[in-house]
Image (cartoon, rainbow, N blue to C red; front, side, top):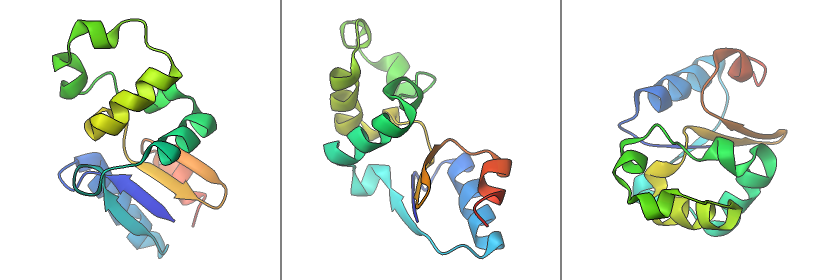
Length: 112
């Protein structure tokens, strides 16, 4: 399993602690430090939908120029998330059964 998130994100820290408590082996990748490639973003978008993957509550989104925020489609959204990884809703957990976006304790319990 690979958990993608930000080291400084409280939700990502809760997800990491929960996986550790469950004894689940995973690798953590920091979106800001490690980045994320377009194929991974496309794979996640296919699994959950680009609208769910794009974090419209983030400071990065609110501070982004309106011209970039309007009329988005899948391709443009993936480009924006690749250029600005903090636009990705987090954490993103890649596991054998698919992809989870965001942290819900019940979803993580099912993995253990």
